[in-house]
Length: 490
Ligand code: ADP
Ligand code: MG
Image 1 (cartoon, rainbow, N blue to C red):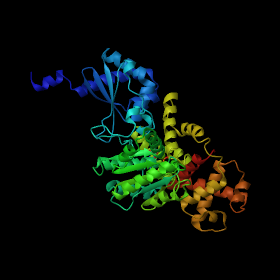
Image 2: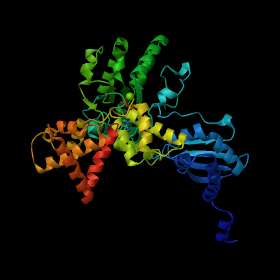
Image 3: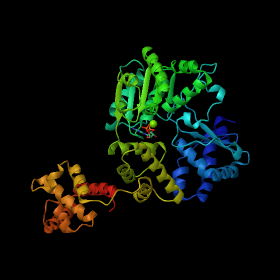
Image 4: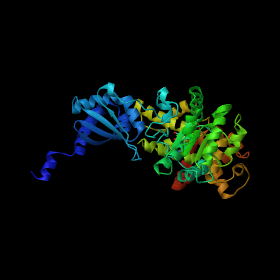
């Protein structure tokens, strides 16, 4: 038998996987609604079939969790039907970091289901159950290996740059490339909750390890550090505890505001800090406010923080929020319509964690209710997440948005000026005020520097005429209108 016919008789593992998976999909399609099928099953890629073990790739950890949580029954029954009783399905989670091989397995026996993963992922220090008491004294296993407690999902690649985090990110990147070797020691990142502090400081650790810049990196929250310290005192193992932290190349301590009022822990931390600093090791800290506003922290410690660089992270602007949503949805293998992205980004303004929460709720709702992901659906989700989708649209908001769009000072739109670009913007704003609010022509006129209602009618007609004649003009007005619709009830 020549090689060609052998190939025909023995289709490759990939081809077999493809055929088996196609058969499975046909069955699954029958049991789930179209939207769920599209969202969760179409993005799965069959990889290979080896001895009754089918491996399919899913785009993300989130995907895997979702499938496991919602479709475990359907999937395992289908696999059993198509491949027989002894079949196994194995998931491979797609990852951009080749060194992290994450394979999960499901088999038709529920007893062998893998441990449930949480999303968004918690740093492993919180999701892992505590080690047995005997190993908690921070002594290391004989091999010298230890856990960094870094979450591998927190990388620079998926940390979206924006004006709000530019300096912090640049400093973090410099430190990651040369830990202990820059003047940014310590590096202190501060900012409100959910703005990316934990992500950024862990990205430094992950990068430094992956690029051989540091071997011993530890991430710890100030609370955990405190608990361990108290335990060490109780067990009389403070010297091991101290030795452990002082042997690090990079020490990352998150949320140092929780050190407030814990004097003994601070004192201990102060000595650790000094020792590491003297050895030229890198210290990275985060806080929810600027260090000088940290009440209950020892002045000696606060003065140490000034040795390096302190940088804040601000709430992200609209463009950054849009980029974050795009990135997250792409990573989860979901194709979000642009208007939906803009709608969420326009309404969730101050917290990136909430932004992610919204995205997850949206996908969940679409999938469970079998609906397409649309702006209407996004608004329903937003009502729950942010309380309400902004208050009714006001004429002031319309004026501000239009002026921003055309880059003209806002007061001009209410002034007497007859400059061409101002007149044009004013007309558009009047038009949109009539279209998008319930205000009378008289009220609208009053908001535009006490103009007459006939001026508003004239403006309205003139905008309509121009839209009919000029496609670009129409597109511009349409864009402002969409922006406004996302900002308020209409
Ligand atoms: P903080 O520690 O400041 O409370 P986190 O670092 O936990 O905030 O960030 C909250 C969530 O938002 C995380 O899932 C994180 O990955 C995400 N996030 C924050 N900033 C960014 C960013 N610039 N790009 C992408 N994701 C981000
Ligand atoms: Mg945090």
